Image (cartoon, rainbow over all chains, first blue to last red; front, side):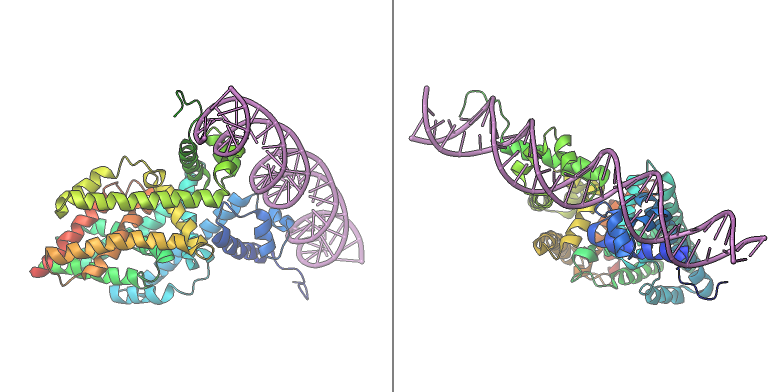
Length: 203
Length: 203
DNA sequence: GAAACTCGATACATTATTGTATTGAGTTGC
DNA sequence: GCAACTCAATACAATAATGTATCGAGTTTC
């Protein structure tokens, strides 16, 4: 260990580039952002960028890996800490706000990334696979929860997961252009409706 | 009127540029597409492009106006021709496939455009307004239908519209990266569930 | 049918963007 | 403490993209 570190570590630089890229992508879109703009937003030159990533694609892929890993980690963690459903959902509500990774923080960027993955499917099928794995984790949780909580005739448990995820991203998307009629809690409100609808089957 | 027209009309050219832009945007994203690439895809040079549009932004805005107008028109038309709900939904199902405007045809482009509008909100607030108007038309229809069909305690009619639209775009989005678990009829299936859930309230 | 007009092509100047090769300050191993 | 190494900056070459000005074939008007 040196006495005083005057140079940031490699990880610091990468992290700064992630944050900067997120800001630039949000403003200009992934396709519209130049490497120069990203590096500058992070307070670096292009040299720093190329020293850390081979290309814009590689940066994006690294950001995605990071995000999916963190997201899966958070979900597993919540699952361990909150055994009953109500607690779990409560924890979800409060957590959603202050996230460390840029992708989880910005709905616009989140959408942008999904489109990137869809478009990159041919070149990079592993990206879509990662997103599908994350998706499957969530749908499985929901399916299990639905099965255990009470039987239903309205919705089959396997289907419920797909529904919930579609609702989440659907509201996220619509909130971008119509926040007035799409309050932040729309998704959780829909979740509540869904739970009630499934409970009702016993009637 | 001349006897034989050897030069295409202005509208033909614009239409070709729309189609070409849709293809290029789908492949490269809006931000990643150059004017050169769009013009070339349409079989023109950049000269033709600039003769018809001031910039890429203007082209996109024209495409959007076109799409929203057509979409609203189609909805109103369907509404007139199919007075009862079941017919209306059936007509929706069959119509969804073969649409003339590029934006309605490509889910990826549809999403891309929403992001464009969200990002352009500050520069061009009228775009988001148009999308919100289209959105309100649909939610109003759903609200009215829900009110007339049978009262409910599970979902309030005003809320049902937002829910339906979120589902539509949510499934559209997820189908891009996970078509396996998101069949094309997912949205209609969810619609059916929703109808049943609302009907149940009487029990 | 000739003058005015339209629209896409071409040519050109300018700026943006990219990727690589090299340099040098900072760091680590021994 | 000095040799090897790391990493961001700088310089450079090449290409990509933009926007404008101009030209000419085709079209309309009278």
